[in-house]
Length: 594
Image (cartoon, rainbow, N blue to C red):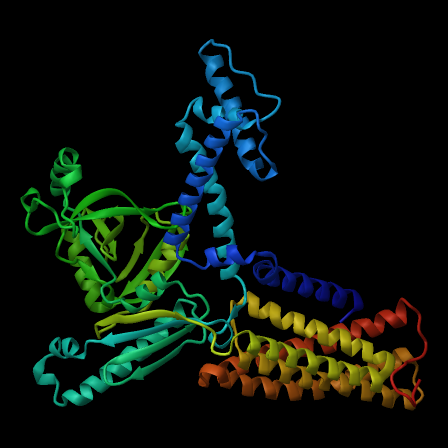
């Protein structure tokens, strides 16, 4: 590989690593602690906070305007001043079109001028509150996005969520054909094993790393999820049975309900959400809300639809699902494949209901209601309901988790503190730092000037490792730190092999440039053989190991790959730079070889 190619490759890798590592840097270094606490809360809590905060800000501004209307807002309200100037400009267009003289834009934006700008064409309190709320909302949601893209700390470092799930084995047993169950005890044992296996697959598919899932007693499952897992998402994963199904929309019943609701909006439903007057719609129908995502990503009801109680198709027939884009509209759509039974059911159903709307129901909420254009045969179905990419991905994940046959219920759910806390983080990072410094110190003392190359290679090695952790949103645990510490010791092996080969070539009388070329060529396969075998062992541990063993193996696998890159590419580039650009003729690589 030519020097220019190696140089471009190194720059590209370092730039990509910085891109992946930036969310972690932004979250752990640049995000204030109070904002981190808010971002780790649920979307509902974020919405409550921003709404309350905006109301407080509006009340404070109104009070300030009454006390001193000519007071100038400080720089923290720059976004509000910008919005006020925009209001004046828009108001000027309205006045001009009406043939009236528009109010002049104040040269100094006082608090009264800002408030007046919102009262020109909008509700004065509502509009300004919306702007302030949007400012806080955007800040917190951006911080939440940074967290989701950063390296997570494991339960042993930062705490996490502790959940106990109860499995209704008796209900699962009753759902079976009595003739097929010969041993009830064995059936319950197998049902629990399947529930644990299914939950493990669900949590893995939702991107929650390093979970601890084990049976507790006869009918309970203990789950431990590191980091600040979203409780709503976890409940969605666990309470997954029947989470998504398809119902036929009854247009006549919908029209009848909408007429009733228009006249009785305040008393249409009881406290528990039941229709107060069930006779409004047929007995085989029920009313559900049609929802779309608001600015917080929360479900916001936009209408009501009356759907048939009978489920046209449920999720147990889905065998495969993926998200694609419509070739015409470029809108996200979910394509899924049904098993043979589901394909027959769906083909018969769609053939009998062409021209009618089919509601996509998730958690008793209608996500979309698409019209059936034609009979759907073959078991391959495409859903295009105008949902966002995130909604499409969520539906895909729900479909992929298949059908949990054992009814589950969350009995307790609590956030737990770190088992080892700040002391564990300090000790783990201290061990990593001391180990790195001792290894680098040895390389500098033993290999002199060439040791600098090893030092730079090791620093970049750690940089790449953390970047990969951040890129794949992996969880950092004490076992992961142990893998990194081992990698620090192992990764210098490549440098040692290269340096010893170069020393042999120098002793044979070769020049600096020739010794470097021969040294790297002779060391290449020795380095590759040792690291490939280590990587194979680590790769098997990542697949077969669990918990701390898996975390150790993952960090070791990453370290092996990054150490090979830094030793063969980065170190070689530094030697060539010193030879061809700096013009060095001698080699500082040993006390006895110069």
